Image 1: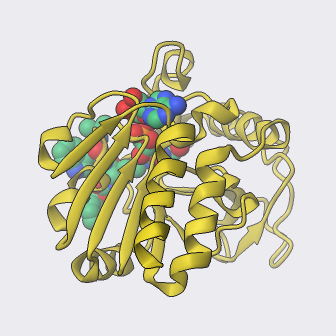
Image 2: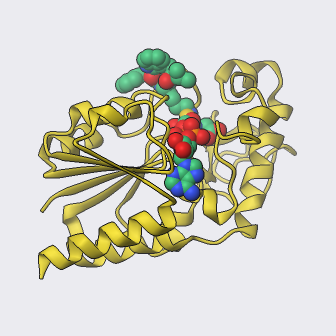
Image 3: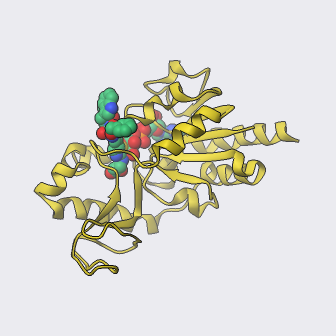
Length: 228
Ligand code: BV8
């Protein structure tokens, strides 16, 4: 059984990472169009770098939760038949043990040199404009897909959705494209696991409401049970 799982900020909420739109979420603090756009970076690179430096540093203060661990367990059962496509820029899927994870909107723990194009695993700040380890230029930006930019690996995602038997969306509001359209690209059955019905809930064959830390382990037990 080929399964594609899409995750959003909701899967990391119970780990202590605030979601975008929920009350008190990230966006209230920072107007998304102010910080998550190439225009904002051109206008005030310091503001944008500090925004991502703070989120990168926060990764050391949180841990994967039961939902992340359940998906890692599912990968043990399904192997290459599972692909996790995440909108999240955190590293909690990988820290829970998932290997087959594709970040369509980039990763906080990666820096991208605008001079030589090389990407580097990165843990520290970028606001102090450190030199690129490859070319020495001080042109490192967060390796993040901003609004108006093209998401990473869309061919891979489209292919996986076309071949899947089951598409499951976890912890996403369904407001940001192209991720919000994946349910329409999925050829297989569709299931939504979310705290509340998302903007696209009616596009799914089934939509279950509740916290990811409860819904995801229960769903994984169901799938693993089917495989026996
Ligand atoms: C592009 C990185 C062309 C930055 C991000 C069509 C129509 C309208 C607009 C557009 C359109 N096509 C393109 C656009 C423009 C734009 C867009 O969608 N705008 C929106 C705002 C209207 N899209 C783009 O610009 C994209 N680029 O389209 O390029 C293209 C397209 C296709 C192919 C080739 C070229 C680029 C978008 C990427 C921007 N970067 N992130 C950063 O992180 O700082 S987007 C960012 O916001 C996240 O990555 C994520 O994608 C999104 C936030 O959404 P969610 O993750 O869903 O989080 P949210 O807070 O909204 O919801 C949380 C949900 O979880 C809620 O439903 C809640 O109920 C639930 N929840 C909460 N707690 C729990 C829970 N669920 C379970 N358990 C819990 N405990």
